Length: 109
Image (cartoon, rainbow, N blue to C red; front, side, top):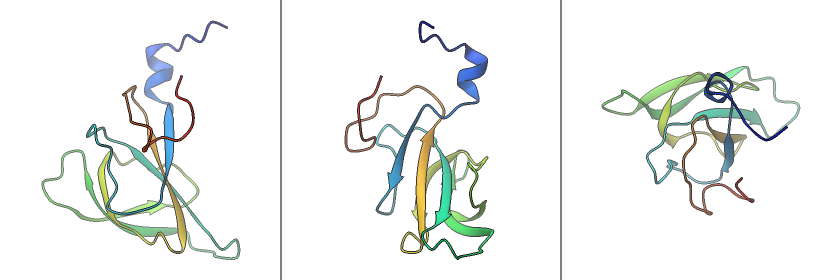
C-alpha cells in the first residue's frame, strides 16, 4: 500500500481527532468536525445527551442531541457547552486540513 486514499473513502472517514478538554471548543481553522462522547463512569447507562453547539449552517448556538458511543452526524463548527466533567468528548475531522499542534496531539502524516 502506498498510503493513497480515494475521494470516496476519504469523505466518509475520520482523518484526525483530538480529545476535547476545555470549552468552548473549535478549530482555529474554522473547520467543521464531528463529535464522539462516552461516559467517564463505566456504570453510567446514559444513551444520549444534549450539547450546546453551533452547526455548519446555524446562525446561533442551540442545544443538539448526540448519541453516545457513536460519531455524531452533525457538522459542528463550535462546541460551546457540554458535560465534560462526566463525559469524554472527542472531535474528529473528516476533511484534510492543517491543524496546529495544540489541537491535534501526536504526529500528523
